[in-house]
Each structure stands twice: as structure tokens, then as C-alpha cells.
Image (cartoon, rainbow, N blue to C red; front, side, top):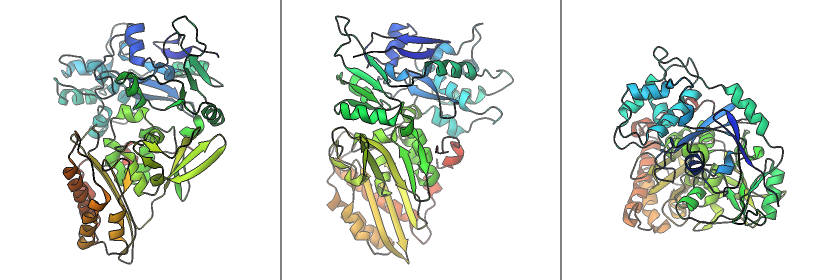
Length: 514
């Protein structure tokens, strides 16, 4: 039984931390331990953005990547080997405000000020990640960067104006981060083997207390998983973090997937897009949308950018939530899930992976290693839709995905999947059967709409009634028909005002790693 110190770069120095629980959040450490109280606590669930910080790490090319995340649900040991930036970092040594801060002042982007540090850090991440000389970011890029931050008194117009004005070179000289210094510090604290951390108990003894394991290779991860089959797998903490902050659950041993390089790759061949289980949602959706631009709106509406920066596609799939927004699209596209136990792998269709409410086909010691998605077929007609009470950053009442393959005027394959309609993400097999071999016309669509009542008996809950869900599901199928019918199809951009070229917006993120 050993323990190591948590090492991360913060405020120009490498910090070492020990003696705190493995589930202590980054926000708690900042406010309670370091007395850096600029970062605020609002919701403690990654929804309001008052706690937004920026985490830096080096990528496979040795370059520094900066991502805004929610400090309130990130566990402190996940910072090991990374850099942390907070609002305290923005002000210069001589007291001058950073261009982000000055623009917020000049544009009157703050009233009560509680949310302002979070906005400032989201804007700083945009500021640092936007290429110099590339002109102003688009309104869509600004909206995306700010999507995880809520303001209840100022309103968003002056904040958006500040996000544009902070790039003005005349009043605000560009204040770039010294990336070389950060990279050099990070190189010194990278680990060759598994990071293992334990907090001492009340007697100061770490023997037998829950462990936090963070292996750096797939072999080490698989070995640890087999040895600790009941350990809690942790990826982006966007769900598990709430088990601690809201439900006060004891997680026991934790096995962190976020340092395993082999599970953070995206690969393409002629037939398949393979996304490693530790790839962030933001990078995964960028890769998916490059193949399937119809997913662009779902990409932008899947939670917020800080959540997508932290969460993983593999975690969303393994979670098995009936309202996970990625699963209906992946099931409709006939995706496969790669499961691994030690050195053995098996592959399942994703729609066979879910056995019941939050119950999957995972066996003890097994984990999700990757998701495989077929590349687009020329005869495929595909759409996915999300219906929620809010347009941005909300849980779906109904999430739908439709994929048809049509040859010689007849439907040769139909896959329809819904989230929010059953205990698991689930295919609409009766509706699919109603379409098999039929022409893709209004009569066929209406037969499939009627068949949905045999596929689903949705629940009534706080998000929607059963009758509403079934009606929405039928209407979404009809919308899919209107957009993809042969005669006078309704253009996607007419019903989706926020449609854009996903690969252009996130060009760097859409580039797969091989």
C-alpha cells in the first residue's frame, strides 16, 4: 500500500498535495485549502459555470491544450500532471487587468459579479485558443465558449460584446500565456507509471483506505481493472462527480481512465471511425460531425463546452442512462462497442449493450475500450433531434435518431432509436418493420408513426408526460420525412438556424489522431 502526492502546476509553480480525500473537488481545494476564492460555487453540479477554471495538459505532439472545465465536480487527483488556471492568474504582476477582464469592465459585463470569474475563464480559454491574426471569433464560437456560464442579472449581450472586444489589439495588447514555461513544468511532473494516491484515515494511516489509480498505459489499466473489478471507473466526472457533491456517496477505490494514451485516440479507415473510450465528448463529436454533419446541432446542444471538454463518449455510453444523448444516434448508425477484460476483447452491437435501466452487458473486470461507427454510406438518410425545455444545456425529454438506406425507391434498411422513451436507449423495431421494403413517402412515414405506440410506453416525469413524449416522437419522425423525402425536401438549415460546418468551426478538433 503506497501513496504519492498530487502534483500540478498552478500560479507559476508546481504544487504538491497530500492528505486530502480522493474525492475532494478542485473547487474545494481552491477555496478552502488555498484560499483562492475568486472561483465561486453555485450549483455544485457543473450547470451554472460560476466555478469554471481552465486545465492545461500536453497532447501527443507535445503542445499545450487548454480546456475550460467545471471545478465543482472535478476531483483533485485528476489534476496530477496537469496545469490549473483560475481567475487569479489573469491579473498581471503590475496590477494591470488582462484584456478579458478589461473588456468585461468596459462593456459593463458584470453587475452582482458572482458569475463573472467563470465567464472570465471561459473567455480566457477562447482568447488563448483562438489563433492570433485569425480575426474576431464568430458569434457561434462565442456562444459555444460561453454555453456553460449562466448570468441572472447582467444579460448576455454585454458579455458577448466583451468577448469580441477583448481581441481588439488597439486598447488591449494581446497578453499571451507563456506556453513554453508551462510545457516545461508539465514535462517535469509527468509520470512513467501508474499514479497511486490514498488519503490517510483519522489516525493518519493510508493503509487500507480507498485508492485512486491513474495508469498511463492500456495494459496497466486492464490489469488494474481485472484486479479491482468493483473499483469505480472515472472519466470526466460529469456524472460521478454529482454522486459525491449531491448524493454524498462513498466511491471506494477509483480507477481513472483519463491518462491512458491508447484510449484517447481517434482512428479512421475506409469503413470505420473508431473512438477511444477516453476521448472527450468535444473531440468525439467533432470527429463524428466531420463524417455526419447532421450531428452538428446535437454536438452543440450536448450539455455545455466545459462538460464536453471533461466528459467522454465512452463514459456516456458505459453510463447506460436512458437519456444519454449520444446513444440514439450511435444506435441508429449501427455502432459497435468494444469491451475489454485484461488482454481479451469482444465486440457487441451498441443496441445489445443495454440490458435494463442503467444495466449493461459489462462483465466483472471488463470495461468499454472504444466505440466503432460505420463511415457514411452514399444512400444513407440520417437525422438526430433533441427536444428539451431549454435549447441549451438541458436534459432531453425526447432524443431521436433516424437512419434509412434507400435503393431503387424502396427502404432497404431502417434504424430508429430514441432516448427518454424507455428504461434504456431503445430501437423502435415495430416502426422499423413498418418501413421495411416500403417507399419513403408520406403513407409509409405515417404507418411508422402509428407503430411507435407499440414500441414505447414512456413514463411521465418532471420533464414530460407520457402522452407528450409519444406525440413528440411521432412528430420528429414526420419531421425526418419532411427533411429527407425525395420530392421537395425541407432543407436542414431551414429548420435548424444554428446549423454550421462542424469541421470548419472546430477544424483542429476534428482532426483524428492515428
